[in-house]
Length: 139
Image: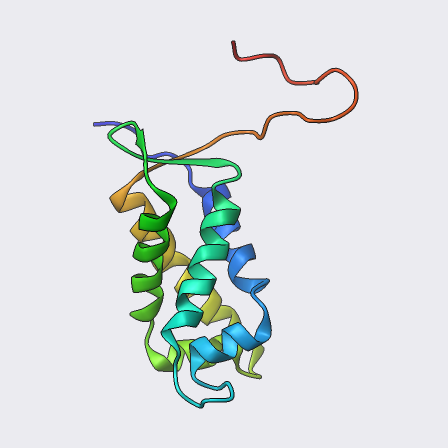
């Protein structure tokens, strides 16, 4: 049996992306925006920003083949859409404890979906600075 990889960086990446989503998008997701109903396009926007963020330092593969970004966005959009309405409302609510619990619940659901469907591998981004890299070359 292969060892479970530590997905702390993936968890953090999803969480940060979720938290830094613009308020109007979060409210549309929760159904507390202008239309007063949940808008699926907002789930797709959130999913897209999460995928763009985590792919900067994670390989997401199936059978050692990189998975198309559009597929991952679709999978996460569906997962976000399954979030119960009350959790989505708590995510944008005034109660900080409920907000934190909702963020954690949503992050966990997305993380579980990613790691059960795909192989997710963290890697250090390549050094792109001015001087020599402090990392040893892997080649």
